[in-house]
Length: 368
Image 1: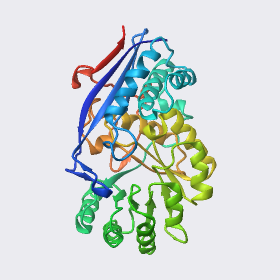
Image 2 (image 1 turned 135 degrees about the vertical axis):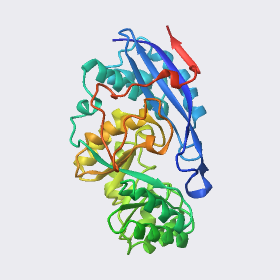
Image 3 (image 1 turned 90 degrees about the horizontal axis):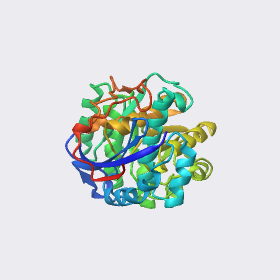
Image 4 (image 1 turned 180 degrees about the vertical axis):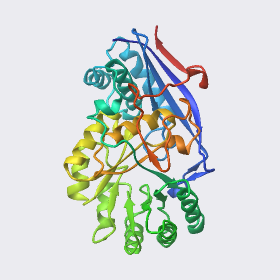
């Protein structure tokens, strides 16, 4: 099998609950997504997606990703997408880094590998260990009451896991966490996620103020080093996210930070290949794993679902189905969650059928 053509598509994903608000005044009602289609000489299409949270969340943006794709895509024409190791060596020979852009290509290659093998990606990642698994929803930063109301409303839809957006004034964040924990009724999993928004002092104050609550805290400060200092002598379980970008950092998360888990975002670590490698290491280290990405629609949701379904149940903290959060339904709103739980498609590859007519013309094409 050889790649003969590559297309890049632009699309906009609107947030389903109004305005998505995080720490530091970061807010949006929509994000700009990028879809990649790899076409082969055997007539198969593989799809990948990368949708960052603007340009102030992680060190990338739609513009940076697309610039990298214009450099990377001509180099994969003629490559065998089912030889993932070779594809990654090829991409790294064109440009170092640029993991966000490479993530979309990696996912598209996994889609083609699964189709070629006649197996879903979850089977190729080791096998399905969970026919279904818990998913979470993010609670946009707002007043304690508005956030508690969000938890109450989404619990009625079957959601039992919530990621609270915090990371501003400690007293306010403690009140937000308390209100949401109460709204969870002692049954919901509550993760207070600062997205690196606290400085060391505010992180210390906020986390110590949450010690009597049934919550986890995620990525209190921007760096692992600062998060370690802020979390020192604190009893709230710690999850790291944005500062963990490769396997070496996984060891830092456990042995230096004392974190009980890591949130793996596919595009942040460079795609399914590297995320699966880090997932396996986290399982070996007896740590908890959340599986998601920065944003997205049906394509990224399918990719996340395969990694989650092939993760040990005792190690999976939660996963996200971003197509529940957005209108990025380019594959007919598939896969779809049910009562707060998700499952991976069983058809080969990603297991979904992207409808190109739901997209505008490609913004970039290379190959035949």
